[in-house]
Picture 1 (spheres, rainbow, N blue to C red):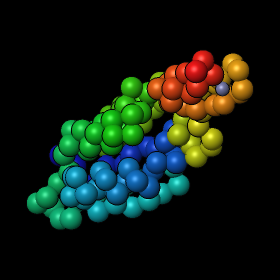
Picture 2 (tube, rainbow, N blue to C red):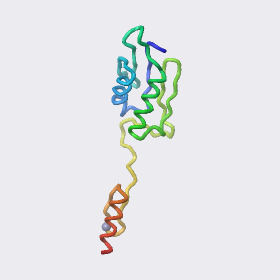
Picture 3 (cartoon, helix red, strand yellow):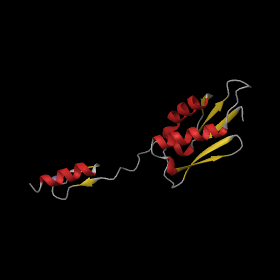
Picture 4 (spheres, rainbow, N blue to C red):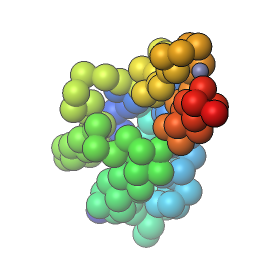
Length: 125
Ligand SMILES: [Zn+2]
């Protein structure tokens, strides 16, 4: 149990703020946003921070945005590092586009396979 925990968000800059709000709410800690990290402090001496709880909350948040498999959560003594596993980071830059389906007849583009299939049918009516 700790009075203060730092979460390194270097690889998840674009979600840092939402993550901070979620985690501090789950854990019941006072959040402070820093440059590439945020700090969670306990409200008082009797109410220390459970590191496992913080890690679980970070996992839940990453799960909720479908990114948990892309990041490792590495606990150090009073530091938790969120590390990108595949080099891609949520740093606020444009994300890779979702898979797109395009019609070979007219070039109609959609990201939904079902919509693509329905569209293709219209060419064969
Ligand atoms: Zn078409």
